[in-house]
Amino acid sequence: MLLTERLSLRPFRVADAPVLSAYRSDPEVARYQGWDAPFPMEAALRVVAGLEGRDPRAEGWFQYALELTDGGALIGDVGVNRHDEGRQAEIGFTLAPAYQGRGYAAEAVGRVVGHLLAEEGLHRVHASVDARNERSARLLERLGFRREGLEVQSQWWKGEWTDDARYAVLASEWSRS
Ligand SMILES: CC(C)(COP(=O)(O)OP(=O)(O)OC[C@H]1O[C@@H](n2cnc3c(N)ncnc32)[C@H](O)[C@@H]1OP(=O)(O)O)[C@@H](O)C(=O)NCCC(=O)NCCS
Image (cartoon, rainbow, N blue to C red; front, side, top):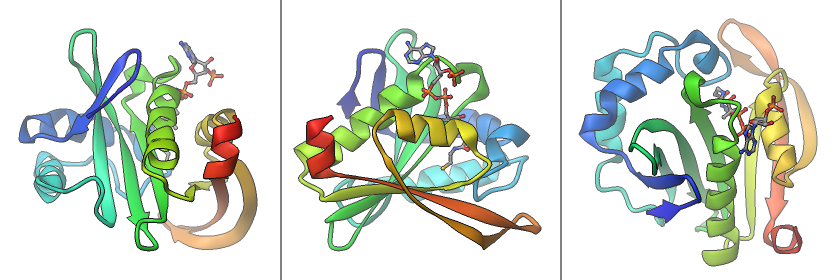
């Protein structure tokens, strides 16, 4: 469990599946993500079941559920994919629409990245976003990620070729920020 001023970042539970299904079913939320809307309850249950008992320090994807300290609502998630024998991690993030534009994503992603680089000793954290996904790019740049490049039409995504923007931050850069 990781804490921020307004959030608890905790493992997913089976009881979270209806809320996960609801926010993943929003077409705007799904637009640049690896799933299609609607995202049915059965699919949400499969995601939650697949995460059950996972060790956040193990290689592969772990998903933090973002819970408001005030009231306990589940508002989104931050995914972490540790790789390179635990030296690096890729991140992804999603907020339910009703909770966007309030700084919650920056608060949660900042906490996770700080945990990985400053507490867990990883060397580098990176993210890959659809170049049209301006809110994600703004979030990463605000947190101090460097834009490392643009892979032009490198992804066949939902019926079209899309550009992939690459972002990263090193532990040495994070400790200076
Ligand atoms: C990407 C995503 C998580 C960003 O969410 P977000 O709420 O815009 O991100 P932040 O937490 O950084 O919030 C920033 C906004 O909150 C505002 N804000 C309000 N109160 C704030 C506070 N207390 N602290 C910080 N910012 C605050 C900021 O001014 C900013 O507004 P702006 O974008 O109009 O400039 C969200 O758009 C999303 O879930 N998108 C769909 C899923 C997706 O595409 N994920 C990325 C896949 S890689």
